[in-house]
Length: 388
Image (cartoon, rainbow, N blue to C red; front, side, top):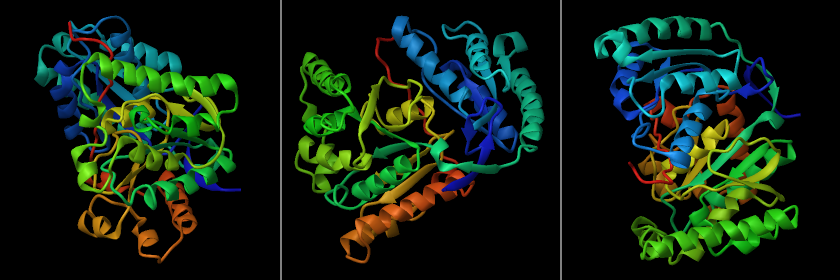
């Protein structure tokens, strides 16, 4: 049975990290959140541009993403920082996190109530020091790989991505699903033209129908804007890397999902509560996609790239896989795994896929990714409404 060393939470969920997270409920609180985190070793923070001037479903989605990060099992405790007059109030975010995780340490700092930024940072620093001390007492224990939720992502793709890094990740996805775990396929705009293949693997007619609905809805929304999808998909960098069309990009993209049946199609940032392969409806935008999968509960992410990428989640370790050896060597401070050995004939897709699977178990057990070593904490929330 495949195991890793993780944190077993009181509700039975599993964490692969033990973060103390400083979480602003509104963009106006970003600098205070950063100030608290940079004053206390052992904390991490998020910055975003939302939390006010939002209404209805758009505001609900932002709140859902923030709560999803605070309640994430990779987070030991969270300090929610608010300004005091915003739409998405820190007190409400903290209460919702506590509702989902009654055992979790959750505190709030309200800048206006504290009497300004300096006092708010001081208040947050005091709370964070105690939280970090408490978190340090947590011990890793042996946990079955079946508890893991893996997010898959590709960005900065090239002509090698669909024949090396992506299919190798697909092998790793199959290995995790066969072990009883969960894999998320996302990036709806990068499945256009290949939806019939994914739908053909659906466990029932309802799931298959949802695959086509998502693609049709995505294309309809783009047409309403009066723009050409090809202005973004493939991106200029993808084209320079050798990709010719959105369909070619999609046929490479879906390899990340391996070959197992598609169990469900879920909305952006929705909780992932099932086993096997799941499709989450996200944009192709790397950071918005990453944020949505983590809000849904994925423990770690494997991110394939042919042109190079440096981003990483503040909550879920993000493993980078290069599709070609030249990239692995030129951006080695960002890339964790080289799948270019497939292109050069040194390894098979299956061999690299097994290496990726072994790497994700090592990272789940605490080995840091390159993005973590560099302290990258990229975060962006999908918007579905206008700023008011």
